[in-house]
Image (tube, rainbow, N blue to C red; front, side, top):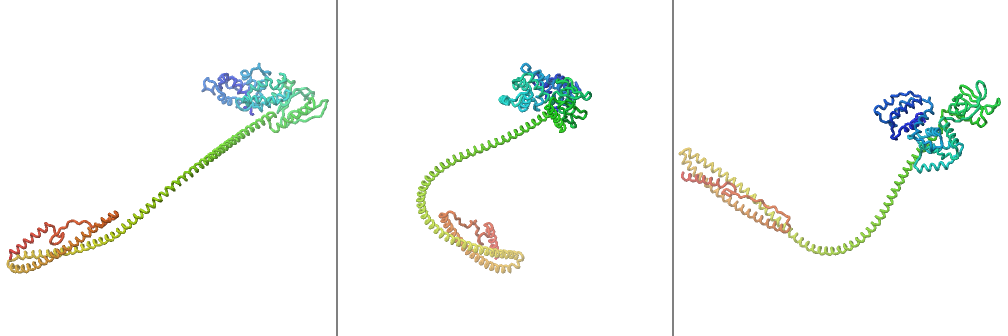
Length: 589
């Protein structure tokens, strides 16, 4: 434990003592007094305005422990050195806190003894706030106290007290509980107050004052060489000797370092139990009261020298460090064990849940299997009933099917008969279609013949018109030629008659072609009617066949020169012209 940590525990007790209403805060005026006293006992220059400057934003309000710590660290603890009297420092803090928390009337110990227990508590308590002492350190303290009083340690008594603490859910106690416990004489039964006070004093000397051994011995003087009885106190780095046990007058110190040595000496000059201490400054001859005391002192001094050479602390401090390390290790092991136990418990719970789920799954599976078996049996029974019903139904259906098959056979024979009839009708229809196709071919031939005859008629008519035009021209040219032209006209009339005869012959041929055309049209109409008749029959039988019918023909004009040669108006105009031309020829004759 560092010096700062040891000082903070005492300061914490003083600070909490100033917190009268237990609000966790102390007024600035009280903190000024506390800071001034701390600086005084620790020999630190005190700055009276530092506190005000540090808390200038807080006005006159109280300051908490956390708020006081920055000032304490900066202006006091950072400046402290180990050149002050720890006893004065501890007494100042004890004076502040004991007035508030200590009730002297209920204790068997004095205020001085309570102060020493308070110092020991600060030494053994944990580095946490509020400071507490755990059961291990409490047992160590009570064991040492019992040994110092010369009594015997009663383990059962301490175990009963631990059980009492556990019943109250306590793992540690405060300093005032420890003082009350020691002051009540619970662990010092059969001891008087003086013995208890001496035990506390001895334990305080060892743990707080670092006194490893003390007692009366004879020391040989350096000048007079006489032997004087002195009270010696051994500390880790020095041996002090006083005139008496009360340590009122100190006669000197023997500083110990790694270069010092201690060794026994043989008896001489009537002195026995001698040993020799050689330091870097002086050498000392000392005589113990007996050989046991001599051996104890030599061994204790040698132990201190060995610790100095090894750079280690005093045995009780080293023991406290080891106990804390062991306790921290045990706490870490307990935490690890607790974590492992939690993990195992979690895993166990998971396993339990898994087993429970498996059990439920098995039960559910068994229930499902039983339900499935019952369902299967019901289904089997239903299937048997259904199969029986289906079998009966199948028999009925079979009979119906046989009847239907017989009926279908009859219908099939009728259908086949209709098919044969339809095939016959199809053949007749094909013959009718072939006749219709041939009639259409004949019609096309007749149409081509009519077109050729019309072309010849048009050519003859054009020739006759040309002759008529030439006649008109000839009549208009000369009268002289009239006769000749008349003769020629006669010849031409003869030729015209011949042409008219030819025209008549063509007309007859046209009439014959027209008759042939009408005959073909009659045949086509008959074929069409025959086709319609067969089509109607096929539709009655099947209803799905559509025959190809000849397209409808528009009304055609029929003239003397053939079908569709002239319109009625053109024919009338040409007849009028022809009649006029014929009248002119008749007049001319």
